[in-house]
Amino acid sequence: MSVINSAEFAIAREQLAGKVAVASLPRLADAVLDHAAELVWSLEGGVDKLERPYLFLQVSGELQLRCQRCLKAMPFQLACETVLTQFADEALLDEAEEADEDLEGLLIDPALDVLALVEEEVLLALPYAPRHDRCDADDVMIVSDKPNPFAVLAQLKTRKAE
Image (cartoon, rainbow, N blue to C red; front, top):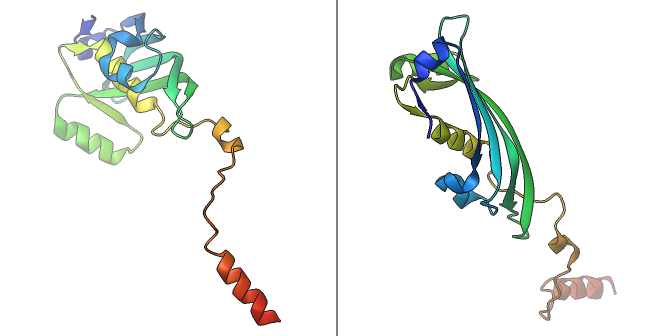
């Protein structure tokens, strides 16, 4: 488990990279079907033009999600990049996010768990209700023995025409 001081890491422009099994990320493991899948991640620190420390996180890998239409496995190619600007306190973070709605902020953490950060960003990148473009279930017509309730109306319409 990698734990860093997020501000020191960013100011020193350090880098970390690695692979992590989905099975070792409990919240993500609950959201995917294939726990043997691996994610490749890299984390790079820096300082922006306003002298704020930031973390640049990239995560990629292929995950198996459950299609919400047919309930079968669906491959999902994950490739996410996130810049997390760091702030010393909540008030500064709120003010910056209000001024720039595209900004993603993070409070400076002297003991930031990198794999927890990776897991959180992957969860945010997953689709809310994943679906195939076209499911096998779409090809099956539903046949019912019940009469169409509008058939009676259609008969009344044709009687009126007579």
